[in-house]
Image (tube, rainbow, N blue to C red; front, side, top):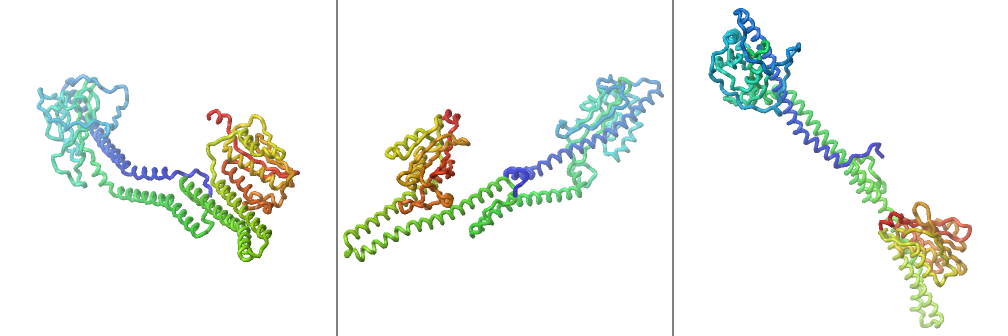
Length: 538
């Protein structure tokens, strides 16, 4: 059965299968990386939300205190402040574990060189209880700092110390939002997977400035470890089990498809070989569903080989029967003559004895000719086209020399400008000579043979061998190329000459056929010629 779509190559299917198997761990690693980055960004988003709320509260407290005491807020000049003409200043999570640098653990807070800002300190005392209460829920570390980087409120124990030695604080006090990752070195054993404590190897730090006018009057620093990959996977373990089952099913499907695509056609080919081994002819046909291009080619080649072997076997069987029949008659005659000579040789006259010997010589000569012809036919059957070439003039010259004593009976004419032919000169001489001899042998003593050489169709050179003999009947015209068929056996014909001609031409991509003719027989021989371009390259 022919496919409407081109069959894939076996190596393509194997490559795709291996890639699918390879993509399972590689894809898993990639997905874990994406998942870890998503956990980090999720933590950063949560810290941004908390920090924005605390920064706004801290800002309002500073404004309220400055108004009640009729004081001006002090701060650092804002260098990287966001534009003030926009209605919203959205902050989005941007950390990525793969691309972001992992900074060392946060350095220890230091004692400040000067006292904290009084209003920032007063606002911090108001907000510190809120920060510590919120930590019980958010588990995030929070520090409020003044414009000098001194902690005025903390969820931990850093109040009154300076954080100016930290990169995120330095950049924040310039007026920009800062987020970064720091290495986390836990000082306690890893908590259980079900614990609320996190097992991540990094910690997310977020710093938001508090801006009043064109000055940075303080800031909020928050930190939190993201949820570890192992903890997160533990929380979605039910979904992971389902996903693993789906992957296992995918592997089973891929294995089944591989078995169907590769194993099933091969088993079908094995069954065909077993059928052919048992002599069943229906085994020699291409597979209906080869699945891959290589198996389809193997199946077609196998079917062609089996058909060729069967045809060759039938040819050999027929050939053996014909050879046996052709040898049996002269051998029987020889055997009978030998027995007569042995039994009655002494009582025979010299003339009778001579006649028997002459008959035996004729039979022996016929057998010798038969063996020679069989040898020529065998060579023709195994002949293969090589790279040898010849010209028309070379072949004509040899034929003219061969029939120089029969010039009255054999004439050769050629067309001008004929090209080289893709065949050995000796082979083509043997082919044309066989046809000429066949006409001379069957046409009688008055027969004449004419050979015309001219350009033929489809890049061929045409050799026409015609005679003016009695011709070939319609009944015999279909048999003349069969081995051992002859109407001139009584004159020593073997019936192998035309079979040899056909085999030689077939081996050289040529052909021979009997053409219709009002008188005599006309054989047309087509031989491949060489293009002018090929001749120049040679």
